[in-house]
Image (cartoon, rainbow, N blue to C red; front, side, top):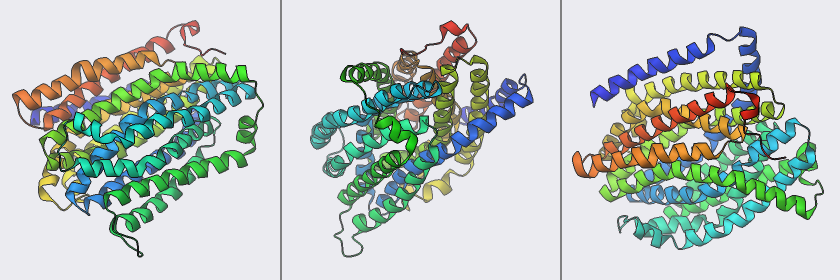
Length: 478
């Protein structure tokens, strides 16, 4: 294992050097101009993404200090919930290329068609999710989870049922508003909701201010109330802002709406499958860890939670790049799109160096912040040291997905992810953990392999598209 870590350190140095090489041929004025455009877009989105994950971090920390079994149950429940919601989220994320490219061309009616199609999709997609959440006990049995954890996991998911609808409504509003350049509004809503989420957890988990001590059920209710707060916040802003109100209240014909809905689903379904394949890989690792025991599962969730938190930096950067690329592709400005890609790549690698260093050198401090249980901490420390290595490929693949989504290319990423994770990474982790080494840390090495292969294929695809003729770019149907 030390050999892998030495390789990880070399990869970090190579990644930063490669990022500097990418920027070397660029003229300074182009670099600074694109950075000045991209960063005001990226910063609010990064803060928003960190804010959303912070709510999950708070949930895990507060439940972890309540009881280790409660931590394992919320880990299992939240993993299944997020895994089920991914296809719906992916369909709604198809709003990015449609709205951003039409917004750059000032086609307000088109923006309105897709914005309304997004809201309608959110409502419809929430219905099967409610059914699956209610009957989640069957899914937990199917995934062979520990019997002592299943009832608590079901309890958490049923408490979250009223939050499914507002969660998807929030995603729909968020994608449209960020394409319109209203990133700061999303950031403010998410930050205010974080305050509420902490308070709701404190009251409902531990039974403060005269409330019953609800534990896991209280954690689910706190999450539900936070989803409603975010949906109402962005909904009120969308109505108050003249630009978004103009788009959402634009009168459209039924056939236009149905055509837009069909196009949204056509582009969005591969994104949903892509997101599902990626996160289901991590979810599968979580459930496989659950078959080993509660302590490895709790340590896994701590490491995964921290990895998800630092992952939000490249996610926010990628979201900004997606919108920016969509605007530039809509204007058919390929040279500026190239510059945007290079700037995004450099800063993604720079952040990966920082996060990898933290995970490798201070994992014990990070794990102790979550739980006082020493056995759980030991597992978390092992997993965090492996997570240090995949920071580079993880950052590269998420900005790669975002850039291709901004272009409207959604099918190739789905295929790349299927190959990287499910044909190679996950099988390696399962075989190594359960048949060769009998060590749960190899489930994380499987994730490293899956991420690295996927990132390589994505960036080869980006290079092929942006460094080829303009006609080869996957423009969306208009």
